[in-house]
Image 1 (cartoon, rainbow, N blue to C red):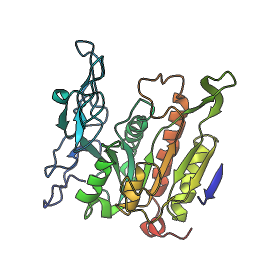
Image 2 (cartoon, helix red, strand yellow; image 1 turned 120 degrees about the vertical axis):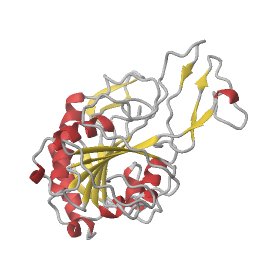
Image 3 (cartoon, one colour; image 1 turned 180 degrees about the vertical axis):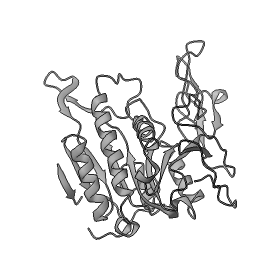
Image 4 (cartoon, rainbow, N blue to C red; image 1 turned 180 degrees about the horizontal axis):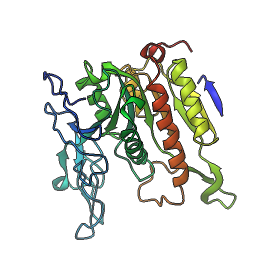
Length: 333
């Protein structure tokens, strides 16, 4: 493991800040990516309520299966026939009359709401090609449950929980968050931790010529700008999450503009950093099976390791909540 290597409240557009609180110190708000309207849902942590409008996978009639909505403002949802019809100039495998455009939502929540104007952010994307590519939300829910049970004085700053949609549509959920809340939530955020693909085991080609487990952990990295406080705390989190191959890395393209075609690094947090100018530490792994659809997951993901890493990044949020904004937003490395 190496330390560093080169390589709201709910705010409608034009509305005044919303300042009410939810019992238990938790707000959960729905923000429709790309829409002029912002919808509100307030839920206590652990409430059994549906927070999005995903189309269920499986169970479709006539040998067809439904695709989950993966994208934000310009999502395509449809059915894939057994013969795999091809759409002219469209999405491969989807019949033209089976495609419709839908909108998905970002989820914005708050712990210790109103305790400060300054925010810390826990972030991940909420859509993926399989349960491994999209296992960050489980860790964020667990972290939220823990943080919401702490005494209010244990968190000197409000923690914003951010789940963004449109991961495979150019990060349009993250981009829309940065645009919509640029003068409020984005500006108030001292730092963010983005987590993706936790607890993964390495699979490579074996001597037999088949792909299989090597018995090693998949290497990971935290990409972060040159904030010494953020880099040091990220390195501590990697060590506490169990010593696996991992590094804290500089942005690959520090001058990126925050679009999918000019990314600062290969992770969802790059949009917050490059477009929102937020000091973001983005943990990510990239195993060989990451983008495969319909794969088994139990043999590739260690849930005890997911728990350890979730605890480590939750501890990092607690440390960052006590770190002055100036230290987090000053880049000296």
